[in-house]
Image 1 (cartoon, rainbow, N blue to C red):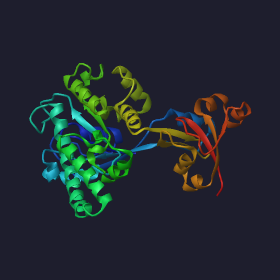
Image 2: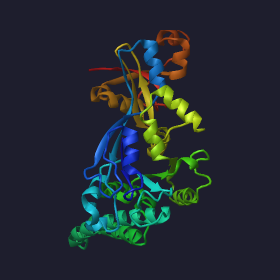
Image 3: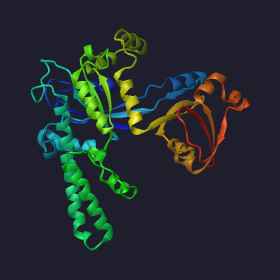
Length: 364
């Protein structure tokens, strides 16, 4: 899973990226301090593999991971090349979802690129630039298809479809809100439009607004209202606090969060929102050599889940021995769970569930 962190300059993007990845991306109080997209790979915290690793005395514990890409601050005109915009818009095309950091805090020492704090104006600025970039893609595709549209029925249908998408975007609407039929889905995906990507809004607030999860912050309220209308998730974060949390070990982190009256860090919130937004979950494999979490789409069947481990597993799939994580921990071993009939022997149609611990059987 790859997430792109976007937002206007000086909204807390790089500070958030640093705290999430501890990658040390340069953070400074001026635009474009992030010239190249910084990339960090972050393990997904999962106590299930920790406990299974202890039970199996595993030599190696491998969590699922998320790749974060910190994309330089966009400004008005980015789609036309302003503020180094073009190269960074291209980087957004490579991600699975966009994390849009929105400034919802006042701080006279941190300059806002537009001179004042206005979350909705900031969201509109970014969205307009993404729409303009998508329109350029569509116009090139329309010009290409138009040459054969009159003589070829399939090209004619594609041309009509592209014109409908273009009209939708010209109305200021994101491609994610465009209704697509089953026949049009493949073509729509091929366009790889920026505004078709899922968006998670990170409302960056001051420490004072954390305790009530931004409920008393007018800017956060507006972001939540906007996101609800687009089917997007919002989580409240204080990038400065996250930077402090990033320096602590697990025990200190827990105590620090409790002192703030929080149950989750911003990273925890973001990971949960990402999995929900992208429809993801994890199944587990466990043994003496390695205990590991594997990320798959919800609804994935056993052979395709096996293919996440190795393509040979999917090709030669025979059966999957499946036991629920909690059942396995309670019984103490796979053998004990088998004896009680708690391990299922599942075939090709089995839909993998979150927290399944699976032993795949396959032919080489």
